[in-house]
Image (cartoon, rainbow, N blue to C red; front, side):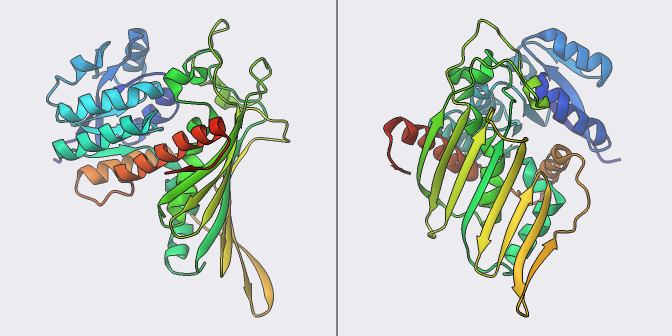
Length: 354
């Protein structure tokens, strides 16, 4: 019988409980959750008692890393800890899967990439929107040349009211790296750039705003992530908008908000190609083109994707078994370059070269 891959989950809060743990329950034939770690040890104990009864429980991740039987760690902590834990894990001989964002600075993202290369260990950061069936089908059509050159696009994730963990680490820049630009931006910017063929970003310009720090009304279930602190910090944006330029001449408009006066929450990618255009909204996609003098709107047909995190983690397991990775660390470095430069542009009021 083939030996199961053994994982240690570091961080047992919102995203871990809501997405990662449920994925591992579905992937139980391939992977065993061998360890659970959280500084609030009761969270790890609860996950053990209710979901993974054979898992060891740790309060300090460094103790978990001493277990030589663990093949990789899955990092689900606040953003500022991603790079710190990842580098320690890679240096301890573990492969690393990490929740987004990759890091809170370019320097920290580079440390992760370098540690992966130095130790010969796999490093992958969650990019779950690539694993929707519609995303994969659109990628195939683009690679087949159906769109021609993609020269422009728009992407975003906007909420009416959905500030996560208000007053906690989500809204504290030192721990989160920023607001919706870094929280939501990774998702849709990554999907757009991946579909565009991963061109290299060369400059960005943008603005950020904070208008809803005092708002107590929330309508998005995403606002349940993180721990609220009524006496805590809110020093990040709640809306960011900007433009990314690429080395091939293409451009991408971006918009991300936790709170805006809009009708409803949605996430989207729109791409404009010479031969066709794409609209991807909340996992559903359409292609627009002209044929025989008629304008055609064609739905992208694909199998439903009820659990994109599961598909992403399953791919990581494939990579550990020898498959080519869909994500490489340099893409993570480029992402953090974009986001950090966007904040710098908003601060300086001008375009920033990468």
